[in-house]
Image 1 (tube, helix red, strand yellow):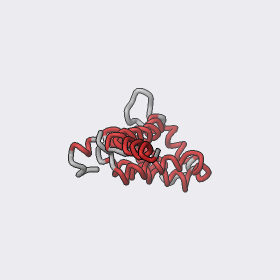
Image 2 (tube, helix red, strand yellow; image 1 turned 30 degrees about the vertical axis):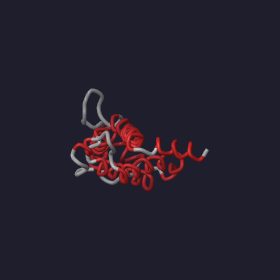
Image 3 (cartoon, helix red, strand yellow; image 1 turned 90 degrees about the vertical axis):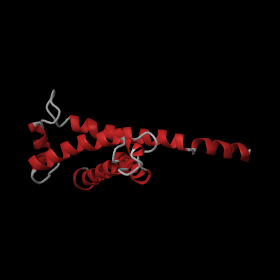
Amino acid sequence: MMNLIKKAIGLVSGAFPEAIALLFARVALAGIFWRSARTKVEDGSFLTMKELTVDLFRDEYGMPFPEITGLIATYAEHFFPILLVLGLATRFGAAGLLVMTLVIQFFVYPEAWWSVHIVWVALAAILITRGGGLFSVDRLFGNKFG
């Protein structure tokens, strides 16, 4: 029985299963922020921020300089997910999204830790510590940008 367990562990702990898991982690975290980013821009445009976004950052989030912080957040929510999906500078992209998550947690929705933010932090932490994995542009560059 122990032999069978060891074989099963060997199968799921290899480079290929890890690469699949890291790919899913990258896409999952990227998807969360990409969908949020798309709600902040005008329909039919790529990066034209909605006036409603400024109102949201001022009135609901209470952020200083909502025109600037809204624009930075909108651009970051587009840029970092693209990096993650490609697996390009994965650790940098995941760190950027981790910082955004922590800002959201501490300054915007502090009650959302157990319901949402802990999962985002876990995904980002995995990508920061492990990198993009086998199926990433980082891997093609020999992990120099990962």
